Amino acid sequence: MVTLRHRFRRPAILGAESSAHHRAHLSERFDVDAGLADDAGLVVVRGPVDVFTAEQFIRELLAVSGGGTLSLTVDLTGVSQLASAGVSALFQVAEQLKVQLQDLTLIAEPGSDVAMVLDLVHLKYRAPTEPEPGARQTAGQDTS
Image (cartoon, rainbow, N blue to C red; front, side):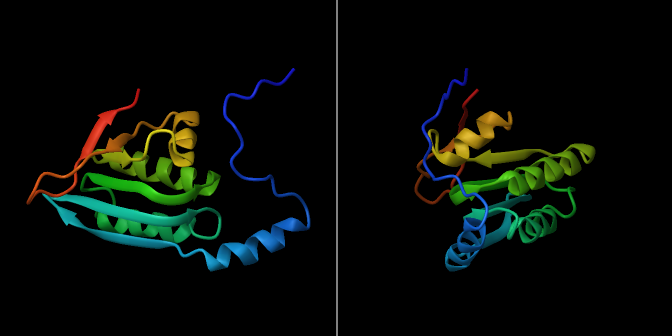
């Protein structure tokens, strides 16, 4: 017996359809904005984080965190798909930061596809909040 806890939001891609999926994927733009705020890295990600973009994703995260020497906040609210390669990248970066005694803060919209993936793999995240006038955007409360 199989019990589904979440409703499917995308069709499964099997066999020959994967090449069509790859062509469709190329039209969806992956973008990373990175910078520093309050002596910590801040990364805003948009588009799919999957096998095609994970290498660039991890390079950007490690670059802005100084190889793990600075705490890092990653805003995933603009991510359209978080696949296993993206999850693996997040775990690798989290481990690198942990070795340097730094924090990884993930921001995701509760109830989104990304939040469901993060819940499934037990990566904690915070909900986005409205920034105060003149202040940079900060993270909300843990969802756990």
